[in-house]
Length: 157
Image 1: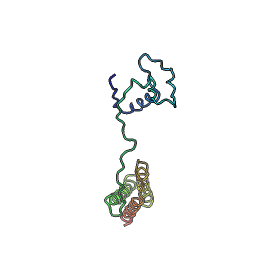
Image 2: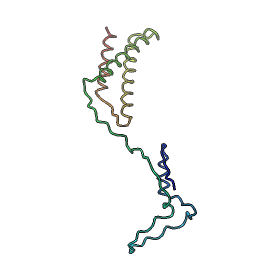
Image 3: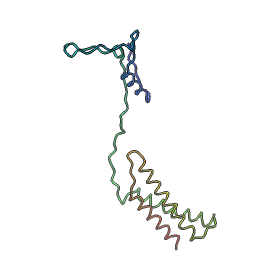
Image 4: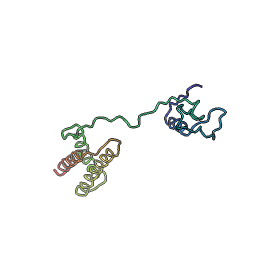
């Protein structure tokens, strides 16, 4: 009998299920009980008829993705600069749109622009925490707060 090669995606689950449940060999009674094992006999008991003619070659994907080394979350990293700049620019641009395009006063637009920037930063950290192997960073949130604070200082000038 030719070996069956199961390659695509989740078909390997079917192959393992077939091995566990058993596929009847040609002409065999699928419901026939396997021969009883004799604990006294020195000869091994043959495999049940469901497994004798079946040979499957499986390519099984790893059960877990390979672990990457854990990176240290440094205070002076490029990621922190990105958080600081993005939060500041988000606050400034939201302030501009609310004041000059929507007709809000500076006093009303400032809390809304700062809150929207903080919400985006928090949502980004929640997304990071939800990914496999990901984690939220308090240092990123601090960088977001510094960026928002700098932008509020520029707006208040």
